Image 1 (tube, one colour):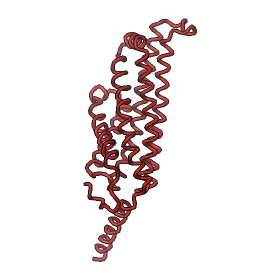
Image 2: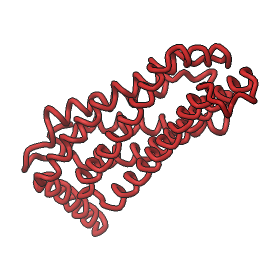
Image 3: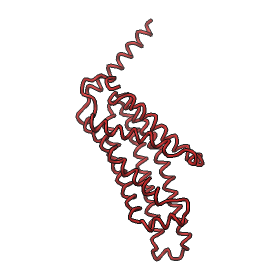
Image 4: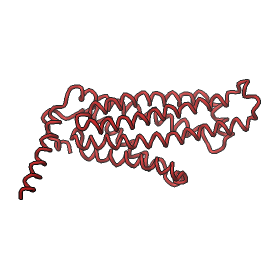
Length: 259
């Protein structure tokens, strides 16, 4: 009986704590949440352009064909690099804004998620250097004349393969960080619980698939990018519009009001 009363009291205290957290949303959190929404919406188009339009059009399994495509469309390839860099710059703003928005929910977990996402961004920035290596190998500069064209083409294709491997590493940390952030969204009551739960699922799926591809690379032949990429894309797109147009709930709103 006493244990039941204590459990009920603890549950009431937890609900009150969460309600107080929502009712005490600061102006800084509201501004940061709008930044999160804007960053999601701004980052998606260049990310899709760089990875699917540019690389999807120029890169094939044949090294010679890939080299010819890149040489013939060098400006497009460079636009893909620039698009990725813009995405990474937006990611830094996104991560900072997520931390500011969600640190009142749990400061330690928000910091952990932010650090994991920063590892992701740093890894992907480093991966982009491989794209400059591709351009250098195919540029025809004097000090590369001692290498046969076929060897340079193979090295360029190898550098592009390293791009893909680096993205798997980055996406693993992206999945970890995004899963924790979405758990905090779920706890906060700031967004609909169904949307937050979808974020937890899609983020965990992204991280799990990236990790599986590192251990079992042959799985990439059977698991299409649409399977693990579409759920997180839909979540980020929905979150972008929700936070930009609705923002955080008004002060005094009950946590379950948006569910």
